[in-house]
Image 1 (tube, helix red, strand yellow):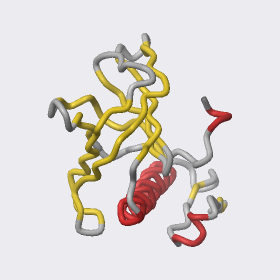
Image 2 (cartoon, helix red, strand yellow):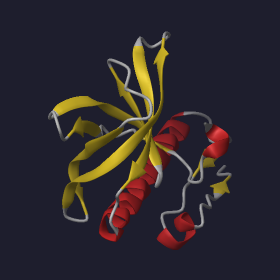
Image 3 (cartoon, helix red, strand yellow):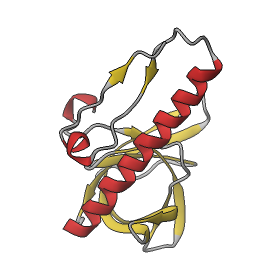
Length: 152
């Protein structure tokens, strides 16, 4: 799985929900997301190899949108026994250029949220510990670069 990835994954600290557009059933929430795929955390397994019509609901506006609709192929599905849930990997398909722009902004927002969370956590601990700061500049993000700074 990991070796086949072409895009970096961003952990979702926000609640992004995935809905099957055909049945209107919520499948779960996003565990991580990239330009090419996502991992969904849900209550049950998904049929590997099937292509589903999905909606990703943000719960807030991203470039004046509150969701994305696309097709996604289920690549794998596995039970996480420690957490008592199912994790399913999807490859995103059928995203328009405008959908990709929204997804890129959502990923930037997730990256900023994670940076804010890590910096808040670091500020509560020793000031000599390293803190991560992610670059929000889209051109830097698009090249998949992240800067790490030591703050002391």
